[in-house]
Image (cartoon, rainbow, N blue to C red; front, side, top):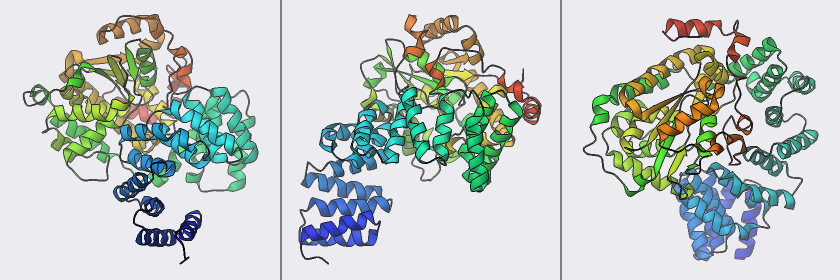
Length: 527
């Protein structure tokens, strides 16, 4: 072991770069043994706990380092990262805001802080940090890629295109960058397709390692109206994901069945034990529905109103429901959680949500949460917020299913990668949608996607009226809304409403016939 604390710290930093975490831990312990007030010792110890995925211990050590040296921006950003994992987003935003100026010469922590801002739904705050990181180290490709992804969220499509093209010149086999680039513009010829096909042939990787290329090629074939070839690659992508997903769909359907059982009309009417909170004066609008059914379009229309702000897609509702259920599990949601949380005071749910979301809210009287998956929790929303608006999107079943099938999603939508899984899940979703319509009555506002894009002005006027909002012309010009969006529709919502996606599934009618048969046999009308 080196003789001085500075030498031990230098050895610890060297071990961090080598990812020799045993040596990092040894250096941290030795520094603290020699000087219990050394911020560096606690910082190095925090890095070890972070790598070992011990968030509580990491938070404790990073906080201790920051207490001992309030100028340590590295400890502050590392602490903010742990807060983000713990969904303590308000603490994240406060911490990063206080240290933005202090990290201006550290490209690594500028980039990490930008990523954390993006994770908590604030890409507009991430943008200048990413820009500064790239300015300091323009040859680091990760910094460039993060800047480009942030540009997409902010609607800076030309800037994102330029960066991704530049990155692909340096690393022509980078699959995710090919996929990102394919999303930004409509293909005019098959030149990019041929580049991506050549990578697949030359690299000869297992299918699950080609997923982004499959979906990128499928998208560009569809741009060129080469329908059969497009479906071939969408199918390859879905099959590749399913080969490693280990998912059968039964657990997700069981959750829907449990929600229908528990959240019935009697439960919804049993509000005597629920308490209210002062924040109820701020009225939430929850926009729900399956992904790719027009939820983002509807959010952009409503959030263009002067009385409305949008939080985008948040996990706050599910987070609070999980926490208050008291059920310990690694799963996002299970039937036992539904049963447990249904017995709770719904005022606790609304207060917990508002505490989590408060850092994003301004003075607008209405705010939007647009997570599609909140369709599971419409009953809890109705109980927790007596004045909440619940807007549910409805789209042609085949267009809805196919639009999900051809999209790269997170693991939250595992059912979407297989037509065999999509059919049963959609049927279960339809049972739940009809259940909410029956038990929630006028509080449940359905918007039909096809009607919205066919006559935006009339549908917008009706929707705003049901939400208790006066009509404003800005809602018709939602494409001028410069607010960031991180959804799968973040490219489409930068243009006017259109009907190009209506009945799109019929271009693939032959390949989708088994799905159509399943839905019709389940009593779902397909037009």
